[in-house]
Length: 276
Image (cartoon, rainbow, N blue to C red; front, side):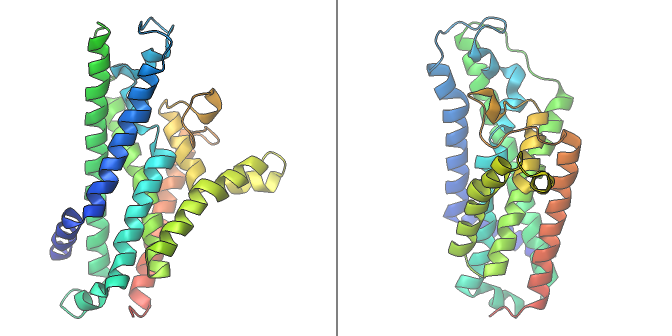
């Protein structure tokens, strides 16, 4: 399996799509998380609780970084998962790999491990970029730089990795199910951006629909992020997809369960279906 992990990491490093998606996410993080809020603020003075610029300071590093994971970052890594799984069928490379020595589950396990490593790197780089941006803004305003506790940073990194992992495996499952990339990406984006929003909008009127929304991927991912301090979509200029519909603990447990379900379902498909 270690050989499969190394091979998959090599493929991911060589794929331009991985670098493009990572670059797009970092650009979105800087633009919508720091630059636009900073330049659109009514003044450049950061007083204690008096200006929205106070939320961009290093003390809010965790909330600012993970705020976009529930929807925008999740959509990007979902595309990554669909590309990784679907491309193997489109290129016919999966059949070639399986004619060599590794078994199907070994190859699939290598893919999961490589994706986990890539996502952890994305989370760490995101936190580093956010830290640099927030520290720069604090220095520009002449304010002391106060970082959040280490425990909060570790919790934020772990939660962000969990949320992105769940969305990525959702895309991986769709790519495996459809044996392609275009349909898998389309279905994933429609689900994340349209279907879940429609269910949430109608949940207040129907009790059974409210129960359904509490097990949805986006709802629980948004609840996890909201528990870390990210501003919700109901706060006016909050982040779309972030809402404390369930508790942070329940959200984390549900996201973990969904991650396991997506991985197990994709593994069953890889193991039992014909690769042609």
